[in-house]
Length: 246
Ligand code: HEM
Ligand code: HEM
Image 1: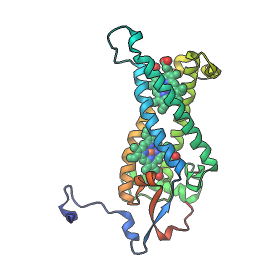
Image 2: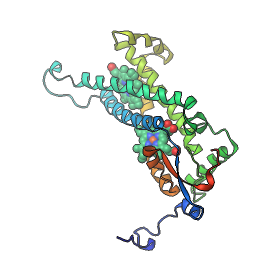
Image 3: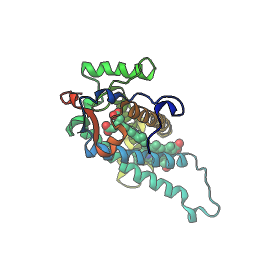
Image 4: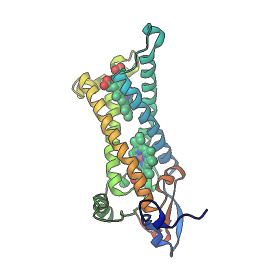
């Protein structure tokens, strides 16, 4: 079926898709995200949702089933799910951080710290786009530099969750996990560690809400297959970008 003309689309004309101005020179498929970047992104996403869901229950058990507790084990089961998921989360985060130093070009740390002149300029360009001062975002092969800097903060939040989580775990463990007990005074005691663990979760969930919205927006405006690229690894880029080093 032929799509309706732009003017007939409810809400007015379709937004201009940026890559169309490159159509004359041609678009090519470029492998940007390697397997580890893609796998860790989606594994971390599933873990964050499971940890937040089980964590909120641990903090505030809103469902208390009738009958003797030792026949239900709702809280115990929730904690086991939280802890096993926490181990997978920690391994995925550790692998991704190590990959920032040994992984493929677009997996590396320079995608998160805007070191080059062009990337620093693009941070400003992206801020202008978000504040409606420009119609198009600056386009990059890897992460856009503003998002990249934010991801650095997100990795900081991951580490906060992991360290406070291990501090809390050390006191209920009867085995080798007690070795993390030294973290408890660093966070100012157990109650403070618990508070930081809880608060950092809400910061992380706040990021996630914005992140999903901006991934959909930027993916549509750039027209390079941004969201698809985190599944396939490939973006669709203008041929003239072959020698770009961002
Ligand atoms: C994105 C990651 C995570 C989220 C969103 C999350 C969320 C939460 C929340 C909301 C609580 C309840 C806090 C309260 O009592 O108010 C909690 C408790 C806890 N979390 Fe996490 N957590 C995460 C990662 C981890 C990790 C990596 C560990 C490491 C083992 C961990 C271990 C624990 C422990 C031990 C508790 C306390 C359980 C208890 O009271 O016995 N969490 N978590
Ligand atoms: C708990 C949920 C999520 C978290 C914590 C999260 C976090 C992140 C992080 C840290 C990165 C950087 C990846 C790296 O280089 O390793 C990233 C990239 C990305 N994420 Fe997510 N993500 C989540 C969910 C999603 C969802 C649901 C989508 C799809 C709608 C999505 C789309 C993307 C895209 C397109 C990129 C690359 C964007 C760019 O180049 O800047 N994410 N995400």
